[in-house]
Image 1: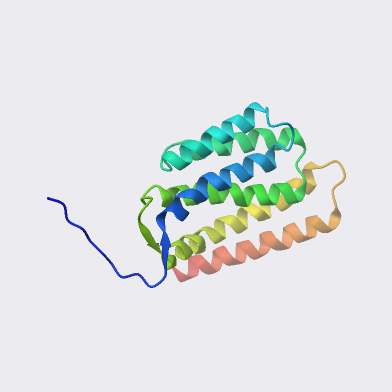
Image 2: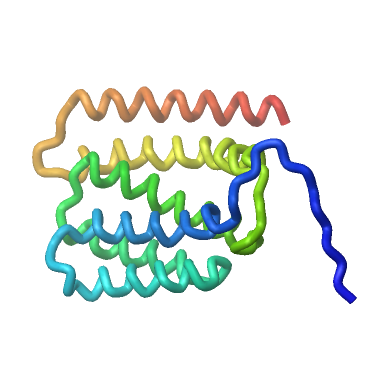
Length: 169
């Protein structure tokens, strides 16, 4: 005996869209992190991780993407824009794989649920982006002084946001 439950959703998002976000973000991160030849073993790791994310998003495949990007990025000489985009993509892979793990291919997800997940990820993303903005200029051989100022302002803004978030809770 099987029971079917149907809910009326205001703005439904197909489950297959939610399930495809992690592997597509992983592929984008892999291509961006390793701009060299496609024979790179790290890109192969990212492709395998993306396939595993599509098949079973709740497994450890997201960690494979993180490992591949984390190893390849310093070796290829990270530019600021690549680092910032890769930090966002890796966070998207990690966060979206958590949601995709509980959503079936034929399911429907209320858009408000996805937006709520994005809102919860915003503060950690701001912290990570601010740290990237500090790390890249300080790690390069010819840092831009204005990037240091921007990074420090961003870190101050993130600290204020965290303080405000703690005051609300």
